[in-house]
Image (tube, one colour):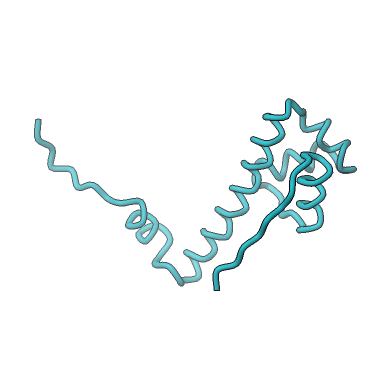
Length: 100
């Protein structure tokens, strides 16, 4: 069965929706996506350790609401808070890298 639908790569889709790499709108999208990924990683690690948001919040001295907002990409997170969540709350360590 033949189809005449054009297949678009994900990069082409991003270029169309948010502009080429290096444009302001694409940079904004990439930044928001990185923030989203942090929330997902925290949520996955929390669930893997069978912790509720409330339990994680108590371990790091914050609120369940704040943990929820981080996991749902509704709040910016300070680096010191991120490190505390990972170290004290989840028993891990944070590794950063930079591409310049």
